[in-house]
Length: 199
View 1: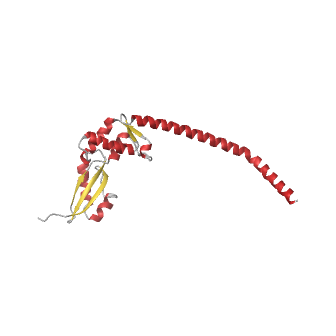
View 2: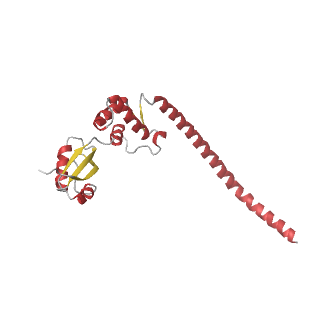
View 3: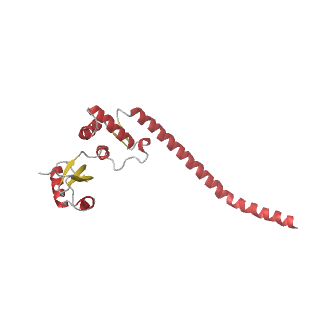
């Protein structure tokens, strides 16, 4: 039997047990010419016990339009947001802490991700995950404590500066409001000077 040749490899992120022919699945797989309903059924069966987590799936399409696929672990960012109970990562990256997780939660994520990481030990995996967490603005209690205290200080300094700027702005606005009448007097005075010069 002739060996089937892989004509295309497609990587998608889909919620476990919830694939359907609508976009993005249909859009990605339609041009490959494979049976989308068949893929959805097989994928949903394979991932039904994965709690509806978003998972990465790598689909290999062969020259006879058959396919196979490999389900990988959920993206690290998805797992971190899940344990941190977070909707969105920090827009400022490591410069803004938006959530804190425990070492135990970090270990949970590392254990889930270990099969897909270039790490040989759970400790190495935790280190890798911690780097991703930091870039998302998620701190780890017991690992980033000094950093968290420093950021709390910075945040309170920033708050104080903001309050000071607002107070100065209010003061300026009040001064401006008072000087409106006097400025019109000055204009009249300037006009009078001009008239004297013309005379």
